[in-house]
Image (cartoon, each protein chain N blue to C red):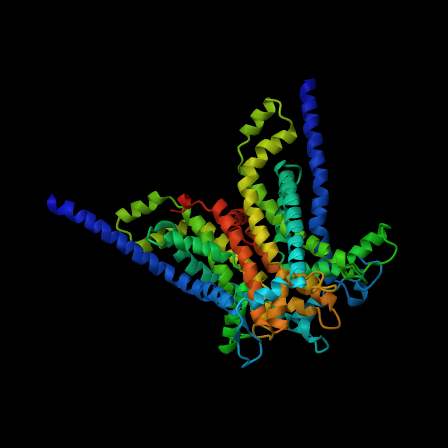
Amino acid sequence: MTTTSQSLPKRHLSLRQQDARIAWLLLVPSLIVILGVTLWPVISTFILSFYNAPTGINQARTFVGLANYIEMLSDQTFWETIGRTVYFTVVSVGLELLLGLSVAQLIHSHPWGWQFMRFSLIIPWAVPTIVNGAMWRWIYSADFGALNGVLMQFGLIKHYVSWLSMPDMAMNLVIVADVWHTMPFVALILQAALATLPGELEEAAAVDGANAFQRFWYIRLPQLRPAILVALIVRTVDAFRVFDIVYIITAGGPAFKTITITYLTYLYSFSYGKQGTGAALSFLISIFTIIMAFVYIRFLYKPEENQ
Amino acid sequence: MRKRKSIFNQKFSRNLLMFLLSIPVLLFIFAPILWLFSASLSTQVELFTVPPHWIPDHPTFQNYLDIFFPSEAVSSVPRTFAVSLLNSFKIASVVTLICLVFGSLAAYALVRIPFKFNHTIQIGILGLRMIPEISLVIPLFILASSLQLINKPIVLVITYMSFALPYAIWMMAAFFQAVPVELEEAARLDGCSRLGILFRIVIPISVPGLISTAMFVFLVAWDEFFFALIFTSTLDAKTVPVAIAEFIGRYVVNVNGMMAGGILAALPPVLLALIFQRYIVSGLSAGAVKG
């Protein structure tokens, strides 16, 4: 009796310790990889941002303190680029949410062919970003593009327009291409969320005389909040670092009017040969990402579910 | 009777309205893709017409043949496209495999074994997952250059881990969570070890989740452009997105080649996604990452 009661807690403890050892063993491969390809480069980039680091071989780095940051933060181009990136993010994420929610509602109302529509949404989502960009680039083409062709055939324009060389238009056209590619992601997430909502609340509200808009605004939308937040945060982080689609459709043109913050960082790091400035810029992008990550964790990570 | 009929009419007109509303949506989805496909079947001459030939008068598979069976006259860009398709396949497959193995081990430990830093590591992985590629690329590029790894497929496999592995861990953790704890406890009482539980109970039950994870990781690896652009330029490791970007040459754009290449590049992920479509929604909610 006494021996068992003494040995039991001891054995229990050693089991826990054993468990902890197994846990670390299971984690080691992933942790090594993550430390090597994510944590080390982030820290290294941060350190680099305090140096003047020309790209050339054997060119010495010199410590410059906050000079890279000061150079950027006092540069008109930087702020214009931030403004442009924020414009892209707000407009494209806004459109995606609006359209995605509408399409999700449409599918949820189960009209004829709704299954086909849900099936179709997968296609633009799965098309690679670069293919999407190449496709829209050709659609917008000034000489033989489909956009010009359609508008001409409907008599909306008299002669072909060089859409992508219009500074105010180019970014909006990139946004359209981005919305085509990513709206289905939002629609699929929201449609899945809609399908799990219990209908009783809305039915009860209908009996109490709430109209369709009131039922949507006061009952359905609040219930959709978690799904909308997931879509919103994931898309915002993604849109803010946009690069691929701009690179392929406009290459930053016309006259730098579609250069986004990631693009500017890419230019500093790999074209202008100023890696220190590039590092400072990319750290500024990281700060934004860290803030968004914090919001994400705060709103969506529920530790009690993960234990 | 009359009332029932009016309810039927109401339902019918609502259904009709929704159906009519879905037509522009379907048009928005399909028009660009169909135009891409039509262009890929056109000759250069027919593509460069005003107004456009929406359906080519003389459809041809020549653009595809130029990619797979290039004659001497074909320029180097389409000629090398097939090689980059193969590169993409190899790289995305290896990334997927490593992520599944490493990721399932890590995810199990995080979900089911309580230990001191469990929580910290979870938050760390979630946070690091959101770090943009641009914040990693300079040190990785300097290191890869000094190790002479530029233009080697291995450099893409390694760097793709930065976004693919945390993503895979996070997704699989969500799926493993759904495995009933009671099953594990029963197995432990029967003397099954932690690893035994993982391989005999948790993984077999989570097969749909693993398929979903594999598909998502393959898709993001196939889609990746930024690292591929920085780290590869020769045929040894160049992936499909870089090859497509190269169709836009310095002076001329090889449009019909680019369109055929685009269809070929889109086919594997689109087919994968359509075949495994029932895993997509669960994967989207579990990982919520590919935009």
